[in-house]
Image (cartoon, rainbow, N blue to C red):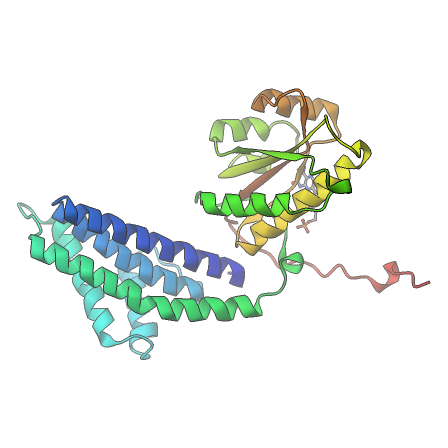
Length: 303
Ligand SMILES: Cc1cc2nc3c(=O)[nH]c(=O)nc-3n(C[C@H](O)[C@H](O)[C@H](O)COP(=O)(O)O)c2cc1C
């Protein structure tokens, strides 16, 4: 698995661990002790997954993850024995809460599990942060690792990432700084399916968790002849930021083909003074291939 994807997955899973922890606290407060024990365990489990993601380790079985974690992170002394005991206990309490007949988790046990999950996430955090920093320092520029992604996992793209990507799009240079762009963003599977049929080459939009459709206005443009250039640069910024975030994307050409532009306008109800430029599906890549080196000295003419 690509280093950038491992990093993104590790950060994503740690974020999930913290969310589970917050829910466990809410459950405890509301007196739902079984749910608190369950969510506390999931906080611990996702904290472990955020560590194992850094190795590219995947297992569909919880026991597989726990034994990998113990073998590679506890026996080696990276984390203390204490964390392993907390994980085992969290797992036992969660199984009781979920499956034991006529059983309700006592409040003191649920409370202990939530505190213990808090401890696990805190113990793991410094290790994660220092490993994330090391990975970031050694990552090659996104310009050289970006490849077109046409198949996505079903994972949703967090809205904070969509905002980062759109911020990058709007950071693009444009002729006389005319910034002709606005963006339609679809996470609606039905709409994405319709978009995927606009051209024979647009199928990657079909199963993408999100499709960004950069559009340009047709009014108030000081340099209308330059709009396509502005939009192409803006689209490249989208691809590069997606790559930086461990996501994948692809440009699906729409403009300047009038018939295809009209179809997109119809699907998205784009107002008259805007035109669609491109479809850009974005999501977590199913697989990642290394980018080829396209450097060709013969294409350079020194004068
Ligand atoms: C203007 C433009 C239009 C494109 N349209 C499509 C498309 O309709 N469908 C598609 O699968 N890829 C499309 N691509 C992606 C190219 O096929 C891809 O960038 C190229 O094969 C190089 O591969 P790479 O992006 O992995 O480096 C388009 C790229 C550009 C720049």
